[in-house]
Image (cartoon, rainbow, N blue to C red; front, side, top):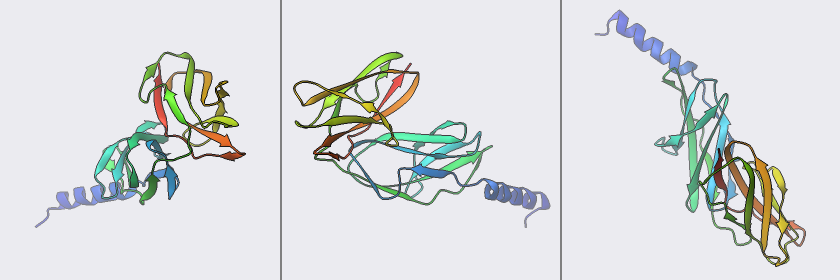
Length: 198
């Protein structure tokens, strides 16, 4: 038989869990295709929450980086269909997990490549060059943020198959990918890299 105190503790726990809202996954968009490499998962959460990124079956993939009311999780994915969820905890009380977010990871045949810097490297603050290869005849190479916003245009070298982009970066974790414009059409983006500026 349940005591009044145990009933009260159980009811309080259920109420607290019901009051911890589900976090939001903003990116990637559902059903989107991504090149092999890092895929950036991001969303919104409560101030002070911790966020876990989960597989389709709610098994844990890892902890997200939380900055105020936003969070992100970045990792290299192998080829295939991916399904993720997220769950936040506030004061040790977890929410339920989000609806599933589905995306696809597959190699692209027409994407340019980033050859330098290498994924996961730590670099000093200041001018940093990003370099790579592109298809001969490429009209432009655009550097993109994780959300596809354009960071800038690279300089295509005289040989026509390599490119370079220099920029002063402030401290923090950076996520970059590139796409080439060929015959007036943008290619699929390259695999995304992550580097840390300290």
